[in-house]
Amino acid sequence: MQEWIMSFMEQYGYAGIFLVIALENLFPPIPSEVILPFGGFMTTNTELTITGVIAASTAGSAAGAIILYGVGRLLDVKRLETIIDRYGKYLRLKKKDLHKADAWFDRYGIWTVFFCRMVPLVRSLISIPAGMSNMPFVLFLLFTTLGTIIWNTILIIVGAKLGEQWEKISSFMDVYSYIVYGGLILGGAALVYWYVKRKQHH
Image (cartoon, rainbow, N blue to C red; front, side, top):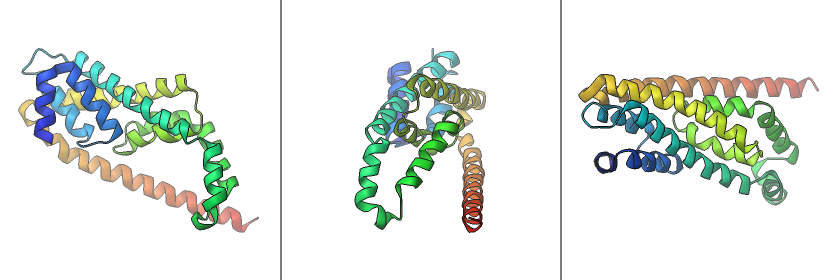
């Protein structure tokens, strides 16, 4: 799969990069941590430019994110309330839990979207809760694009600098992913601990 995607990118240039990145956002066969550095490497031996690759990959990411945002809008809070009415006792969920989560995203969603666009795996999925919470589309697109540009630019430039050794970045990205996921797990555990303590005092 990886070889086919790379040959596709080489054959179709910017259009190929746009399409591959858009698909990677929807159902990632190969993560952007591989695609983007290779795109950077392509600027060293083809007519592609770093600016062009950044633009094409960012547009592709935005296109994929918009589709997932639309999926989130279809799964809005009202539909989820219906699901909770039916299956909530099995899922141990209540409507107030859903409303709390929705209110939290309304308050912090903009920055969540921005920072999560730089977290492997989560970067694609964050578009769905953004749509579910009815986050204003213009704000969603703006902060998605800003976060994506930073992520894409770093990986593409590193790929260009490494040249034929661009694949070395994958080992660094593994370490980065472990650090980020570890931080998310610790942060989640801290939130759960705080929530339980708060419930005990009420």
